[in-house]
Length: 188
Image (cartoon, rainbow, N blue to C red):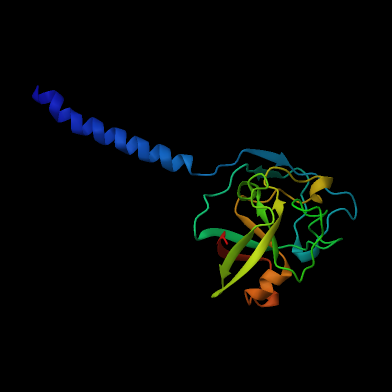
């Protein structure tokens, strides 16, 4: 009897540790695949705002998920033009419209975009000691890229808030530092 009762706490501890490990792994977002880069036809990849163009043969990770959303979700802020002819490509996914660079709008990585559930909703972006409210109008596609529909740009990472110039201005980021900034965001 003594042997089985001394093993019970050990077994219980093992079960508890296993469940914690499984829960933490379930909350991780791992790549869902890869895309092989294709070189854009001449003039087909808009490099406005220092946008990247796919490199022939380079492998790019894709994601169907994003990190869990909290009241202070960490993300990478990138710069995008949602205007017609801008590096954002076609009209925005949520409303099939173009948006002025002077309007605080964003595109979210696929997991955060969540099948359009955040379309036309506001988020609060914080960085640089300031906050700004911006409307979600588009998806920064983490599942596809390197094709005409995506302006021959690579798939987005899974932690991107792709923002208009108005957002960068509101955060008080000097113009020569626009393009990549660690931020936090939350649903407004």
